[in-house]
Amino acid sequence: MPTPAYIMSLVASLQNDSKRRFYTDEAILPYFNMALDELQEIYQLNDIPVIEQTSSIIQCNVGITTISFGGVPALPSDLVEIKQLWESRRGQNQFTPMTRKEFLPHYMEGSQFSQYLIWSWDNNQINLLPTNQDNDIKMDYIRNIFNTPILINQVSTDLGVKFINLPTYLSRRTAALCSMFIGENETRAAALTDLSEQALNRALQIPIKGKQAITTLRRPFRANYKSRSPF
Image 1 (tube, rainbow, N blue to C red):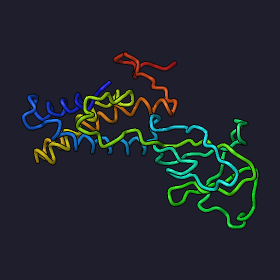
Image 2: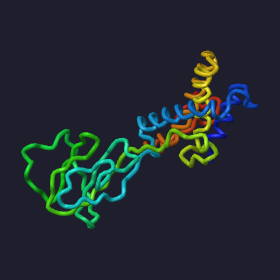
Image 3: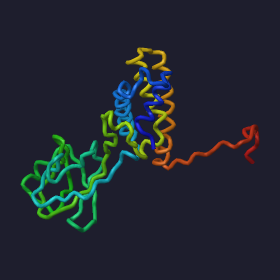
């Protein structure tokens, strides 16, 4: 699997500085982190499967009306956006979907139910109506997978399987940022940006097609196939 050090060595080569006189790890690293942050936003925007996660069961005892970061119970620390909440009576593992509302209905305030049924998101926390039994909640959500900023003492750490198809994109995008802000060479930056976009398009095709269950039909390998009658 790739490491930041390997990707940054590619960046130096793209800058015609294989001996690393100017494009050292220290010089490149801030722009590598920028490229990672951009990539994460692209992943989240396109719903790439690697950023989708189902939480462990969140146990909500009687009286619980909020789930927050750092609270009890707590939201997943890598949560970016909730896609769906599910609930079940404690220990039954029979989950049914909950409905998201912009606000909890005021006419239901002061009442207690056996299930939550609905939820809202406000002030970076899940808001619930009180229940008269212990319930379990599961969450399908979009997560944060890149722990940026990567520090200089982490550049030899394996980035993991989620990066297996991305060294080409990350090296070219990072090199483009370096060309723009270190080398101040807009022509090289534009060329590298174009190459990075092509690399990203290739890298995203496999997970996107897999998610959409698209089967790619290959063109027949015959020079005159178009001219042949289909009957």
